[in-house]
Image (cartoon, rainbow, N blue to C red; front, side, top):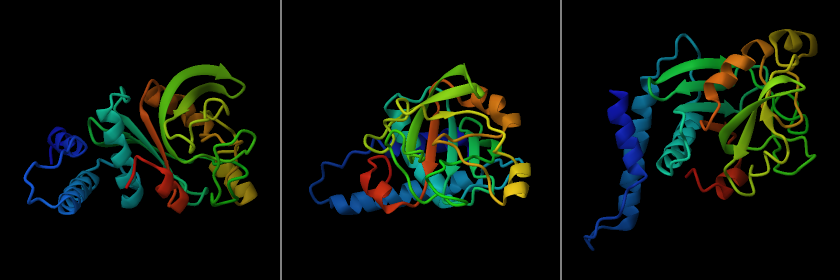
Length: 235
């Protein structure tokens, strides 16, 4: 399916208004809208140009698109790149995808670290608090770059109140780290961990940051019940 046509259909779902016909059951309308959205997402997913990369799981991809199109509708996203991080997966696997939504192409598939207090190989605990050294879930808008102690780094603005909106205050940023590598995994049996930042391999850090900077969408996924209950951007 042509991406531009599909994007209009998806985008339109979030502008949906209930018909004025009094015989229309709002619950039925909502159910039908959900089915339509899911069918469009599956079509988009099946037509992703993965460039020999492994695809993300459909569940995390679906949730990412739910938020992406709502944020796009609100005018917050200005760079049509979607970065998906799936913290339900092992830290020893590549669990970050950078997707160009204009061409429906996976640009990067990378290792990414979680916070040291979020778990060992698997992330299980998340926080929005300073000094927690835990990762925060949810939707972010990428900000500006700067040169820090890890070299080129990218500031993040958490968009979900009470879930990740303290990201900038906590200095949760994207940066490169030598503990995010296959070699580190071989030596330590697991990937290294950050202080809460989604840290990247040094060799990919600059490329990815330059691609996703300046108001693109980052979504950090985990099938956490508490997140699903608190978030206003996913169903």
